[in-house]
Length: 155
Image (cartoon, rainbow, N blue to C red; front, top):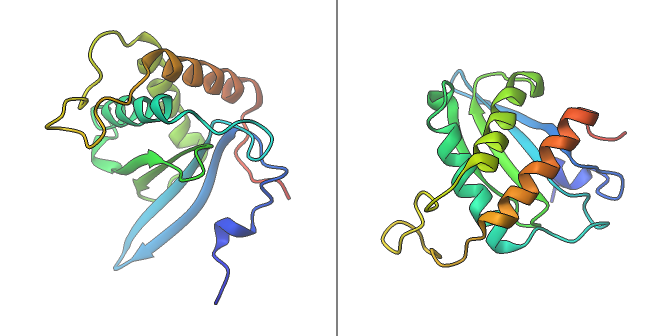
């Protein structure tokens, strides 16, 4: 079998950042996938499930209510728990996605109250959330993005 592209990235050199993962086109529609790496794979602990789950709920809520809401295909966690995927309609660049990712960080950092969609009827694991940890991850990620602006995978 052919090795999928994401398995060809050297995860031993990958650092936190906002990476253009792939562009897929079918029937004239382009979908751009971004990797939001919150941690350095295999060198830092994977993200805690409850904090990552809250990031998923808050970032998705922000993005689906932002001015790019009609372009959002999906936002959700990576199975390896080092970050999340953001899929957008259109041929997008990391620089175009950055303001919305930073906005999602700011939304998370300012958020107080009940986590959106975190009720038993709305979520399959509604009890496993951690707003404090989500804020920690968002603050760290935002700081790293602003300081380093890593948009390209390491060669």
